[in-house]
Image (cartoon, rainbow, N blue to C red; front, side, top):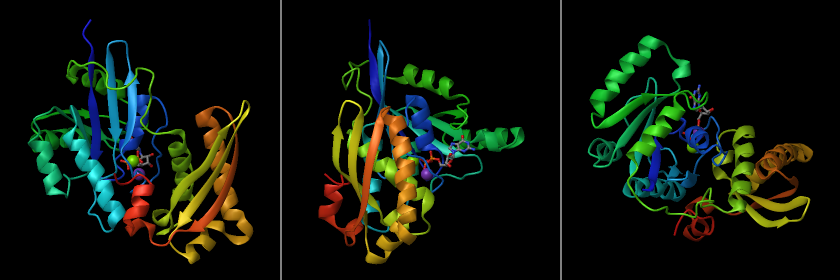
Length: 293
Ligand code: GDP
Ligand code: K
Ligand code: MG
């Protein structure tokens, strides 16, 4: 029996629905999702195993013009995703124009590997609009297979899944067949907490936050977790904690619930806040948090 395997890398502008799609394809909430740009900071692998195939999806940060070192690293993840793809998924939203980043866009239209162009969020648009947009994108990216989907409502996601399998090269698997992701448990703890912070704090606060799980102890009936929320300045620390600690308490409660769901086990979560001055522009810190080699 021949076996197919390959890397299927999802790229596109911020907020088009890349992470929602990866979770839908993998069937697990590996990537956090919010309505804010730059929710996804890493390249996150989601592996789907079948008897005669293995699809290694990569969710990537949205394409932006970097303004500080963390964002430079985020765009390095996107570049890497171009380089090792066997199939590229370029995701756009109804009503959106091509990537502002010309270099990336040229890579897509000149790609030698198959490109699947997904027009997402069709649940938000009219039939007419959609037909017009399909024509537009077929002209813009003539080398692509175009599909309209709703990642949120899982419309057409299965069709895309079977197209991906068709396009995969013959290859033995790259990862053990029971592996779901490349990231350790602590990564998902950090991301879950960061998701709640993205949801509950305004303006610059979520972008100044990094979360680090300091201890993760699994006992027969409970997982005991201690994590630190790092911010760049003292004033941000006060905002995270909130009046009499109400704000951080809410983050803790919601994160604990999500984590119980994710790990399917009772969770004890201990959160505290620390200032890590200007970590987003500090090479050593970026390495420590896995944004750089
Ligand atoms: P990413 O930044 O490209 O990873 O986008 P996300 O997956 O984080 O989604 C950004 C926002 O778009 C979230 O609020 C999602 O719920 C929403 N979204 C994603 N896919 C769809 C879709 O098919 N339809 C609608 N209406 N919203 C969607
Ligand atoms: K987002
Ligand atoms: Mg994302």
